Each structure stands twice: as C-alpha cells, then as structure tokens.
Image (cartoon, rainbow, N blue to C red; front, side, top):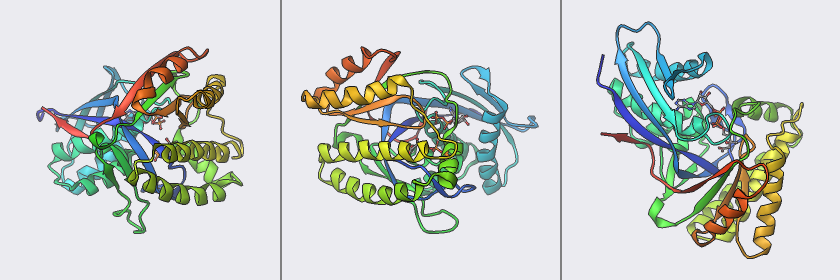
Length: 327
Ligand code: ADP
Ligand code: DP6
C-alpha cells in the first residue's frame, strides 16, 4: 500500500449559477459561472493506492460510503488511472465539515479534493487548468473549487472540454466578501443537481431564457468584480439564483428545492436591505439560504438568519484557498 496523500478543498458558492450542460458525459456547461470559494466549508481526503484491492474502497466520515457515492469516486479515479497507465485500486477516506448532498456543494469540494489527491497518488503532473478540467469530470462545480477566492468557470468551445476550466479572478485577500449560510435542513436533498439540471434543460420552457440571462449575468459579474462593486455583484447574484430556481420550478415535473424557511429567508434578506444591512440572497440545489454581505454587516445578517424559524444553524464564511496538499 502507498503512503496516503492528504488534501483539503473548500466548497464554493456560485453567484452566477451553472445549471445546464452542453455535454453530460464531460460535464461541459451550457454557460459560464462565477463563484466564491468558501472557508470553512471543507473536505479533507486521504487517498492511498493498494494493489491488493479488487475495487476502490471509499469511506465517508468513518463509515463505508454508499454504492452510488463509491461509483462516482471510481469514475473519476478511472480517468486518472487510464491517463497514468496504472490500474491499482485506491482507498479513499474522506470527510466533509458540513452536510453532504444537502445543497452546500459537497460534490465541489469532494471532487476537487479527489482530483488533486488522485493526481499526486498516481504521479500525474497537471497544470492548474488541467486539474480544474479533471475535477470538472467528477462534478461540474468542482472545476471551480480547485481555485481559491473569486473564481470564473469559462464554458469553453472545445469538444473535449480542455478549455472549460476555472480560474481565480481575485485572491482571497484582494476583496473581503462574506457569506452567511443558513441551515434550513441537514438531510440529503430530494433530487440531486445532476438530475435536476438535466430535467430543467430538457423540459423547462424557461430554460432558453435562463441560459441567455446567464451569459449577460456573467459579463456583468466580471465587471462588478473588476470594479469591486458590491451592490452590483449582489444584485446579479440574487437575480441569477432566482432565475435558476424559476427555470427549475417550470421543469416538468417542477423542481422545488426550497422549503418554508428558504422563502422566509428571501423575505428576511430583503427587509434587512431596507433597514440598511446590504445582504443579497442566493440558494443552490437544496433549501439552504445564503446571504452575501459586506464584512461589517455579517454580525447582523447572521443574527437575523439564526433567529428565523426553521433555520437550524448558520455557518459564517469568507473567501478561502483552492485545493491543496496537506503535510
Ligand atoms: P451537494 O449539494 O452537496 O453538492 P450533490 O448531490 O450535488 O450534493 O453531490 C453529492 C455527491 O458528491 C455525493 O453523492 C458524492 O458523489 C459526491 N461527494 C460528496 N462529498 C464527497 C467527498 N468528500 N469526496 C468525494 N465525493 C464526494
Ligand atoms: C445549483 O456541480 O453539483 O449548485 O456537474 O452534475 O455534478 P454536476 O452538478 P453540480 O451542480 C451545481 C449546481 C448549482 C449551481 C452552481 O454551483 O453553479
């Protein structure tokens, strides 16, 4: 058995959402997206190769992972094994510091961590662009978690996806943005993002309009980041999330990720804004509301969200680094 490679990667929160693929096998997005890599939403993974194993062995938080979880890990490892010409199976021990499969992007941190660990373990030397493209194969949003800070994921035009990669726009220290995550339910969501976005793409009459909006939102968000214009970025983030959920709600059958606490949180966010706490609402493929705030407004936003009925807890986040090896 080889010595274990230890890595850490953070989840990310899209301000301009990725929701629809142009190629499902390669996880190529139909549009660009823009995200924040968030401390302290972390995955820590340990990977070792073991020639005596017949199949990959995967542990999530000290318990054997489900067959579907393990299968997704094996799919990414197979890509690395083929590229490295090394068929040895692996043992993965991984842990997320936040609820798994609940709309907090565990697939992003988990697959970014796995991609980095696998490259090191199998001896593949990849550039950061290539690592982002590899992580993307595990989960689209994982392409972004390879990078730290404020991140853009370009859709790319190449058929093989080599230019569909994410890059840092601003490092964590360059703009202090904060996110307050509300836990509106900790169990796994009813429908995964992969299935939800494919159903939306194939059945929602609003999908075309959503996609057109994404391209404009991305251009506007790049400008907002360039100018460090918090208000502009917040408005784009809120409208991108609402448009994504509108497209999903219109799918057939409709996909409703929100629960009552999510809806209350949207209204709370708007009333905070009226009272001078400049918070913007966003939400992913799950019920957890997230507020984008300036550092000085974080305590008030946090307290208000914590006190909202149906919110079981909050996680205070700030910008963090991309995936990295641990000693
Ligand atoms: P989320 O909203 O948390 O991203 P998804 O349903 O989109 O939920 O993704 C959950 C899937 O991501 C899991 O079933 C598993 O395949 C993968 N995943 C989650 N955590 C990890 C991890 N630590 N290591 C590897 N893969 C992970
Ligand atoms: C709503 O990256 O989880 O969080 O590529 O199928 O693994 P797959 O989907 P995933 O989808 C993320 C969707 C989202 C929006 C976003 O993060 O951009």
